[in-house]
Length: 314
Figure 1: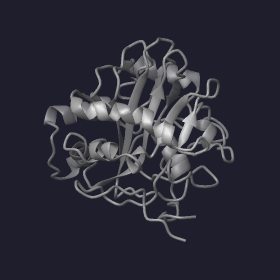
Figure 2: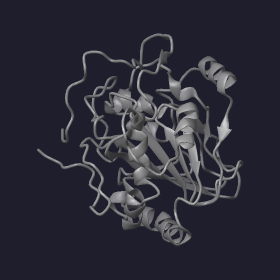
Figure 3: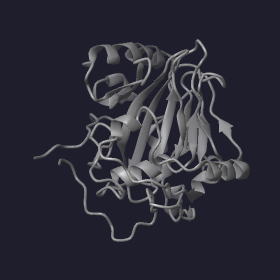
Figure 4: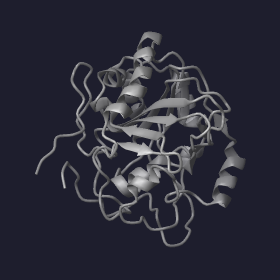
């Protein structure tokens, strides 16, 4: 195996993939980590307080129109140039249409520029209170008529169980590359649900990482749990024109419906993790997921430096 990953801590503060249902676990990690000390950034005190309370923020015009034109060309170039059997390309189970392209920042300078931009990188640093690296990056495609949704889940549950992230010190940024309408599969979240960790029942199957990227079945709360969470928090849907960035906490419950409209929906999905929250061995999986799905070396992103997926050794 390659990459940096120390052993698991003896105490797992967020147990999951258990044999039988256990009670929800109150979050013990901060939400806005810069509150622990001075960490300047573009977000106002009011925005930080809203992120602390709700677990998300909408930031319009995070990518300029001239950048969007180039990024939309990448939506066609990347799937066409990558080999059909490249593991970074995930396809819909029925239609075979491209569902996701992982690690696009390593094969697109335009994507890498967005990661380092002043409307993206400083926000990640401010929310996490430290330097950051990309735990994961992908372009999500939801083609018209055939794009399937993502079932309700917390990303941290998977990243903790299968990638070994010890603490909830990770934030996602989903940038709309096309218009996100209420009716073409836009992301839905349960505000405030990030304050509770919901353990999930069921062991992690061997080598299921590829199928889980097509259909989320392992690591999802049961329907009763989801109903209670929705009753308590309600549901917010993230919509907006291309260039809108939706920032959300790693533990926020979220999902999306399928797209049966003619209008495709594509988003650039960036996952920033604190360099102080380096992955350890998985907490509830037999082996690590591939590097293009979960980077293991916490190399901080610098504004003018190339972005790597971690140095490989051995």
